[in-house]
Each structure stands twice: as C-alpha cells, then as structure tokens.
Image 1 (cartoon, rainbow, N blue to C red):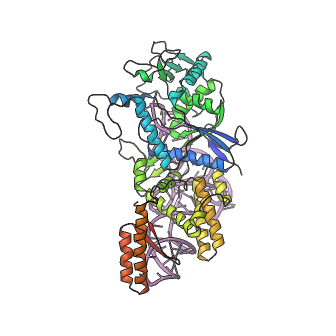
Image 2: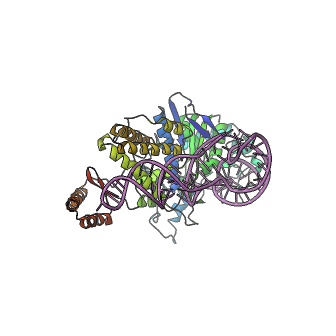
Length: 481
RNA sequence: GGUGGGGUGGCCGAGUGGUGAGGCAGCGGCCUGCAAAGCCGUUAACGCGGGUUCGAUUCCCGUCCCCACCUCCA
C-alpha cells in the first residue's frame, strides 16, 4: 500500500506520487512573528513534522521549507505602539522595540517552542524580508501578464486583479460573486474590493527600515506574495505539497495559488491543511479567556506528553483541549515507556532494530491516520506485556523494539527531556533514595510493614514513585502534572 | 448569504453496509504483606425523522445543532 493524502483542492484522498521519484518537496506556512507561539501554531508544526518523518520512513528524500513572515501590519503596529507615551510594557512587549527586533525575538520564541517539542527544523526557513527581489520579479511578471496593476491613486500599492483570473476561488471552490465583502473594507485604489495587495506603498510615519525601493515606489510586500516567491525559489515552479492551518485556506492560500498560477507556475500538487485546536470545542481566543499557551502546557506536563497530546487526533480533525487532557496523555505515554523500560535495557532503546508493524504502516499511509497508528502501538504494548508476563522475553523484546520504532516515526521519542540531567544533584538524590529503599527492604524482610509503608509514603509525598519488582524496588520521579 | 468540515459509549477519538478500534476513567478478578505496575474480564455509543436494503452508525432525503473560513489568525 502506498501513501494516500487528502488534497484540499480536489477535496479527496488521492494517491501520493511525488513529481520526482524518491524526492518530495514540501512548503508549509510558519508563523507571522508578531507574538508568542500559540498552541495552534505548534499543533500545525507537529502535524507537518509527522508528515516529514513518515515520508522519510517511507524512503523519500524530503526538501522542506517553512517561511518566517517577519514583516507585516501587526508587527509594525506593535512596534509602533511600544513607542507611544501611554504604552504599558509587559513581559511580552517591552517599551521602544524596533519592529525587526520584535520580529526576531518572537522568531526565536517559536524556535524554542518547536525545539522543546521535538519538531525538527525544516531544510530551510526563509524570511520574507530576505526575498524582496524575488517578490518584485513575481509582481512584475503579473503586471506584464495583465493580472496585476499599480493603484492609480499614488499610494504606491500594487494589487492582484482577481477579475482577470477566471480560476480565482478554485482552491476553496468559491464564486467571486458569492463572497461577502468585508464590511469595513477600504477600497482604496482597487478595481474590485476583493483585489489584494502584492505591494504596499510606504506610508508616512512607518519606519524607513520597513520600506524597500521598487519599480512602483518605496514600500513593503503584501502578505501572500512572499510564499509564492519563496516556494518557487527553493522548490521550483511546481512542487509536491503545500501545507498550513485550515484557517489559511482562504484568503492566504487561495491568493498564493492565484498569484502563482497567473504567473504561469504549476505550484503545489497537493494542498494539506491541519485542523484547529479548540478549548472544549470553542476556538481559543484571548477575548474569551480560554487560551493555553505552549509554555503553559510545558509547565504542566512533560514535553513528551504534550507532543503526544498534540499529535493524537487526526491532523485534519479539530483537536479538543480541556483540563485533564495532558494528564491523560501523560498516563497513556507512561504505560508505553514503562513497557519499553521493562523489556529492553536502556542502551537497546534505539530505533533501527525492528520493522514497523504492517497495520501501523497501513494507518500512516492512509492520510496519516495517527489515531489508528496509536491503536496499533497500544496493542503492541499490550502484546509485549502479556509476553513478558508469560516469561517470553524474546517476544517481549521484539514488541518493545517495534514500539520504539513507532515512537520514532511519530517523533515522540526524540522530544528532549529537560529533567533528565546527570548533575550532582541527581546523583545525590539517587543515593538518598537508594538509602531509604534499603531501609525499606530491611523493614520488609523483618515484616515491619508499617515502617516499610511509611518510607514508601514519605517518598511518594515528594514525588518519588516506588514499584516492587522481581529485581527489587524500582523508583522514578513522577512529573507534577 | 456563500464555501468547507462535523455531530460516535462518562470523556478523548478512529472507523465501517452485517454482533461496532484505541486511550483515559469505572467495575470485577489474577498477582502483591498491602500497594504500584502488568494482565484477564467487564460496563457503555453511533443528533432526530424518514427512505433504500435481507441488514445502516456507515448510502439517500429531510431536519436540528456545532465548528471553521469569507476581516493580513496555524
């Protein structure tokens, strides 16, 4: 069975065949770095990280590109606000911060969040501000082809002419006539209210650092044009997969497609969109006060559990977060890890020593059906535990190696564990616990169970969890979820 | 108004024209000095009203509700 993926443009699951055998070119939309990462950004990144890992596990050589939008209205607005007399600085937004410093600072915040959750860096991460030349070439090409025009009002804006492109709306299957106009839309120099900006003329008061010379006057890029320009530069005029959040389908991706297709490019062969993260079914928003940030999640649970949670629903489905979700993920994950620890020595806990179960492969090939793949994983864990209970170490170890393999593909095993240090404090803790455990063993040997249980309770009260096994008492520090 | 996607057991969440994954939670049992961990068993669902069919949760029609986008939000 080969990989099948749901393509938003054709609205169906199709067999995936890359343009060039053995190689996959993937572009997916990253963040506009105007604030700290939102859980939704990270969910999207996890979804495409899993896609990339699965493509690689399937033998493809993947060239992945994820953009950084480091110039846009909001970045400029927030920077400008930080210079206002009545501005109140806070931890996220200090006073008097230049737009490029603000953008760069949040770009790094995104990297920290991605890294913490084991989202591998793409092959390349181009910034919009570094590709002004490529955007100019694309805009000029569109003007020459009659699909774009400089505004007649001396604003310096250049717009894409949606009326000139009959296929406009094809990605989301909408008719131009049916689209609701934005109630507060400022038509400016547009021929049609739905025309969108390719280039925005510099306005008085905006920083000079945020403007570039162009054939149409000084200014800065519109939002959509960067993705068309950068994907074409690094992946070619036609590439395999374009991804992003469901909310980017329109207008962002629709406009990208229109620009690139009107410029004569084939553009993306498959469009993939991940679903939104909600809080108990409602969209997270600051105004509703129902948000939870990646940072808060990481403070509440181990990074691996957060990753497990973010990846456990099908990527196209809405992912429901609610209090307790992370605890559930933690419990499920702990069972898996406990089995591997039970079956394999630490050093053998590496991928590459077993084949993925056929059912797991089939699930992943079926439009990345991670929930079904996780079902296979859990069934493998149970089968392994059953084998170990029956004294069949060989089968138990095989199942454990398969489990390790599956965790590797899902990207869970590579999430860094910041708590696992080998510093002197950990060594001291280890000695302390071992001392208490030997006292407990003595107490148990002399049938002084009250004392033995008191020691266990004492350890439990500080988060040290005890398990009696055939090899003696094992201990672990439980996370404070 | 337009477009797309949904409504599955206590919760999360796959899937399918024919006694219906998986996880979490619950209950009973095995094991254990007691636990923990593990295993076994078990409780329990397909928004509603029609239709097609030998049989529908799965297909069709209607209906109600929810979500997303149409406002430079992943």
